Amino acid sequence: MHGGNYRVANGMPLSKKYAPGTPNVRIARFQTGARNSDYEVKIQLVSKEKCQIRDNALEAARVGANKKMNKVVPETNYQLSVRLYPHTIISENKMIAAAGADRLQEGMRNAYGKPMGHAARVNIGSIIYEIRTYEKHIPEAKRALKTASSKLPGYTSITVSPIDQ
Image 1 (cartoon, helix red, strand yellow):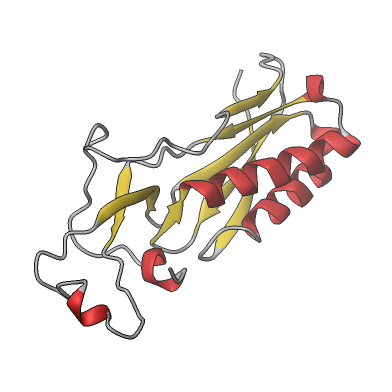
Image 2 (cartoon, helix red, strand yellow):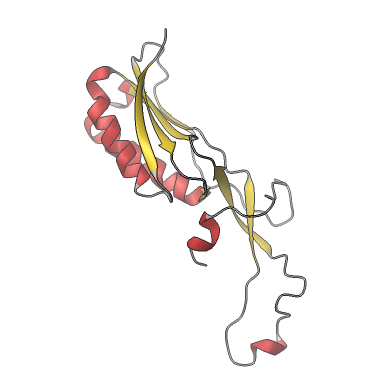
């Protein structure tokens, strides 16, 4: 399985969650940190490219950002949220590449494939992650989202905006 095969979204997405053999979504938590109502700013990781992001990449980026924030800022001073849900089911038609494999498989005949994971389809301007925190923690939050963006496909940008009370 090559990463470039699944980054570009093409064709109609399959999103039947209860299709037989579909694995569970690998995101452990969509919200971490404390839910305070007095946070001052929100720092968002925004997509600048249309692509697909696999659920295990979303989870790896969430864990990386959370670790980076937790080292410097106590968990009661921020809230990290995953703003995407991986609805699209990725299927793969596995091909055997060994001697005598032509007797074992049918090639592209009935090449629907087996479900092997989930992905989120992302458009330009979609918010991937959001950190709500206080103004004094903006540099740490930016560093955490920079770490998260290194684990995701496509180009992203970080925006900072005040929270309206």
